[in-house]
Image (cartoon, rainbow, N blue to C red; front, side, top):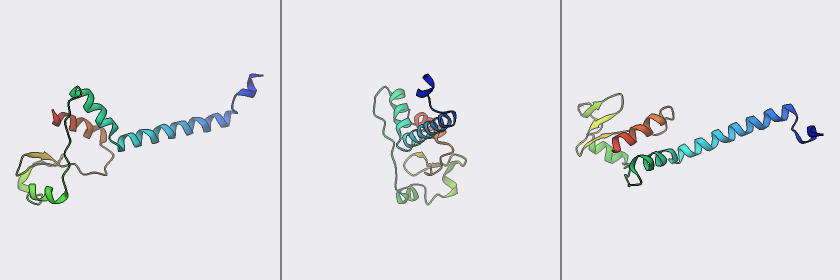
Length: 110
């Protein structure tokens, strides 16, 4: 009798795969929307605001003297000694080190 309420074995596997991909898609959208960063910032700053600044390409070129090599502080992490203050320049589009960036943003913001 209970067998009529269960999904067939092959259908169970499809359901499980569907749930897995749906969860992965949710996590991806959460990361893209900055949810993890916001969540970590709220935890680490006890609700105090700490804005992350973004700059246009022209502003960055002006501040880094058109990305001149003399201003490079640390080449692996793209840190520059700019005209205003030292800053880290992080190119968007690379997803391989998102967790590292989240931690790095939080660490540099304190």
